[in-house]
Image 1 (cartoon, rainbow over the protein chains, first blue to last red):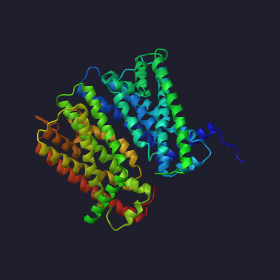
Image 2: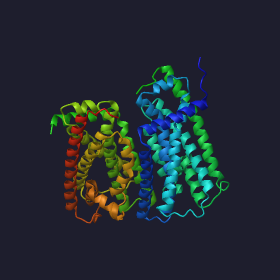
Image 3: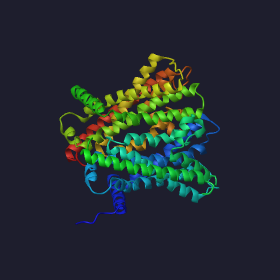
Length: 267
Length: 261
C-alpha cells in the first residue's frame, strides 16, 4: 500500500507542476514580455486618461501607483481563479476529482504561479512608475511596500480560490474571474478616490482586499511604516483569511457534489 | 470567393456563439468599466466628455470583441483538433475566416450597443446624435474595418498557438491608439503615427463627427477624408490578410505541420 500524501506535499507537487506546465505552454521570455507590455500600457492608458481630463485630485502619480497595485489583481486573481476551468477544458479535472488528494490543496499549489506572476508584475509596474512616469520614491518605505505586496498577493489568492471553486461546477470561472480582475479599476480607489463612489458601492469596495492594498501602498510610498499602516494591513489579512476559509468549504462542497453526482467532467 | 463556404462558416460561428454566449461578457466588461472610470474622474455627467466616454466605450467594445474573437477563432480549432481537417479540405481557410469575421463583427455591433445602452441607463446623458443616419453608416463602416483587421489578426494564429498571449498583450495598446477614449491628438507623436496606420482610428473620428454636435476632428481632416482613409486602409489590410493566409496555408500543407502544437 502507498502512504497517503500529506497536504503540504500535494501543494508542493502542484506548485512545481504549475510552473512546468505554464513554461512548457509559453516560453519564459514571452511570459516576461507579456508582463512588461501589459503593465506598461495599463498604467499609461489611465495616466493619459487622467491627464486628458485634468481633475486636480486625480494626478498622474495617484493613477500610476493605483495601477501598479491593480496589476497584481489582474494577474494573481485571474490566473488563480481560472485554474479549475482550465483543468476542465483540458479534460484533467475528472482525474483530479477522482484522485484521493483534496482539490483545495491541488489548486492552492497550482496558484503559486499566479502569486509569483502577481509579485513580479507589481515590481515591474513600480519600476515603470519610478523610471518612466517620474514618480518620486525618495521617502518610500521599501520594507512596507514589500510586505504589503506579499500580503496583497496572498489575500487576492484567497479571493481567486473562492471564485475558482465555481469552475468545478460551471463551464468556466474565467468570466467571473475576468469581472473581478477588472472591477478593481472602478471600485478600489485605483483611478480615483473611493469617496467619489455611491455609498453602497463604497461598502462593496471595503470588502475587497485590493482597496486596502492600494491605500497601504500609497501610504508606504509616502514613507509610512508597517505600524502606521496597521489598519489596511489587518483588513487585508482578515479578508484574505476569510476568503481562503470560505474557498476551502466551497471546494469541499463542489468536490463532493461532483463525486456524488458523477458529473466530474460535465461541460 | 466561395460564397457557400462563407455562409456555412458564418452559420457555424453563430451556432457556436449561441451554444456558449457568456463569452460576450469579457468583451463588454473592460470597455464599460473604462467608460465608468472616465466619467468618475470627470465628476460630471454633462458636456462633450460624457458623450465621448459613452461613444468611446462602445467603440472599445467593438475592438475588444474583434481582438478576442479573432485571436480565439483559429486557436480553438487548434485546441479542439479541427484545424487539420479545416486546412486539408479543398475550401480556402480565408473563405472560412470571412464568414467567421462577419459574425464576429455583428456581435461587435451588439457589444457596442450594449455598452452605449448600459452607460446611458446609468448616467442618463440623453445623447442626441448630430447625424443619426451618418452615425450608423460610419459605425457600420468602422465595424467592417474591424472585421478586416480581425482577419489579419487571425492569420497570425494559423502559424502560432499563442492566441491568448497576443490578445492579452495587444488589449491596452490597441485601446490606446484607437483614440476612442483619449483623443489621438493627446497621444505622443510616435503613437499618433501608429494610430494613423489603423483604419478603425479614422472610423472613430468619423463616428465622432456624425455623433457630436460641433466636433472639429482630432485627426486633422474632414469627415469625407476620414471615410476615404477608412476604406483604403481596410482594403489594404484585407488584401494583406489574403496573401498571408494563402501563403501560410500552402506552407502548412507542404510541411504537413497542421497539428503541431
